[in-house]
Image 1 (cartoon, rainbow, N blue to C red):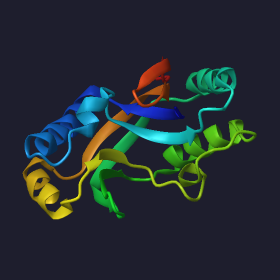
Image 2 (cartoon, rainbow, N blue to C red):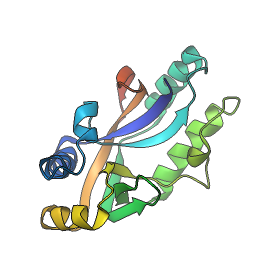
Image 3 (cartoon, one colour):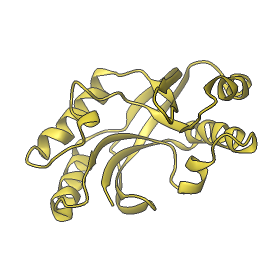
Image 4 (cartoon, rainbow, N blue to C red):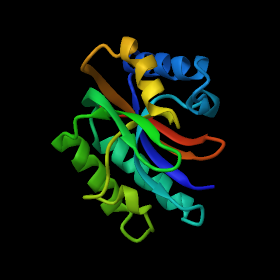
Amino acid sequence: MPYAVTLRLDAASAASIEAMWRALAEAGLDDGCLRIGYPPHVTLAVYPDDVPVPQLDATVMLLAKEWDILPIELTGLGIFPGPDPVLWVAPVPTAGLLACQAALVAALHGLRCDGHYRPGHWMPHVTLGRVGAAARALEILAPLWPGAMTGRLERLDLVRFRPVTVLCSLALGP
């Protein structure tokens, strides 16, 4: 099971995302995000299951002490195309968010990071679900989309997945 380092959204922003998860589930399109049992988040990096967990844990603890809460603005919806398309909420890729992601990967430079999470290749996103019927999903979500949402990324987590197990969770500074 691989590992991920994530930044969790504040409660109010998370509630809006969770409402979208429920709407997709109720429409029978996807309930994966609800079933996973982990709050809405932005994944900074993913590492394979053979990485040294103590190094991941120590790095996450160190960075959580150095990083402050990050403001985030969620501005639209996106789709990662493919045989099993992924629908997601798009945060503005601010300098602060990009710097945190790059700092994490740099701090773990000796470890194999999934290629989608390398700086310069990473697309920040908050997953809504895997939806084969993307047009239908957008119809369902349109009434729930309030327009741009502002929030905060407040916790840095190290998780092992699937199923999701939180190995370390630390609040970011003021």
